[in-house]
Amino acid sequence: MIKLISVYKEYPRSGLALKNVSLHIRKGEFAFLTGPSGAGKSTILRLIHMTERPSEGEVRVSGFSSKQVKRRDIPQLRRRVGMVFQDFRLLRTRTAAENLAFAHEVTGGKRSEIKAKVQRLLAQVGLASRASAYPEELSGGEQQRIAIARALIHDPVILLADEPTGNLDERAANGVFDLIREINSVGTAVLIATHDLDLVRRFSQYRVLELADGAIVYDTLHSDGKQ
Image 1 (cartoon, one colour):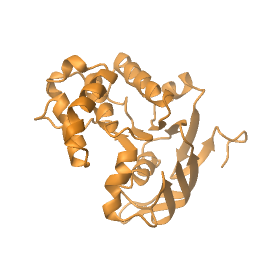
Image 2: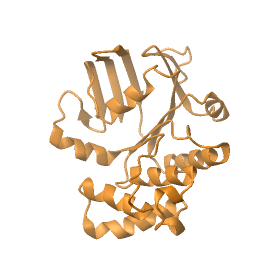
Image 3: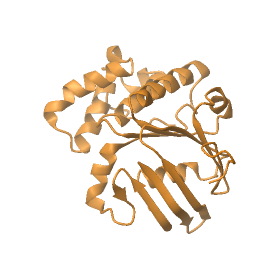
Image 4: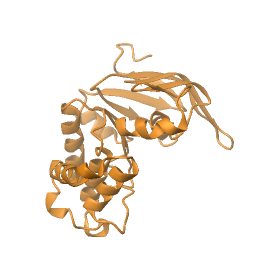
């Protein structure tokens, strides 16, 4: 499903962001990616989403390889990999429904499917009654639910979430996390980058990968905590 094989990522100004990272997320798995700010969590998500390519090593995602994938193939990859951001990234001049419809259109979805799919997703995230609301009329938790619905517009097999509860109060954060767990329960693999250790401890049944200085230093999948 997701494999990083001896991945390094270096930036011209800041240097190495990832150092020899290898990991494997399997179909339907739920995992947390933890570590302090600057540890490399967001970099890993961007590599999986293929917004960026590794400096060395290989990233494999649902049949695509960073060594072979062409630019024209990226939209097809993005249909399989949904991405949720901490800052929501909703279009302020479009309603909740229009944000979902726009995401469907720009990724090549069929126009005939848009209305039904948007209605279904709004109902799935509990916001069918807020379809005509603009982002500024929605609470933070509601905006994040719309962002999650947008990430699900093509029924992806993988959902990536970068600090999805970071800007929310406790009640809204719990609601968003429960929604992500529901999505995982129907077979979607989930990888959440977070520095919220309380959240990780509360759901200790899920796999945890810990990053420090660009390297994986702990993985609960292995009894010894090592790769």
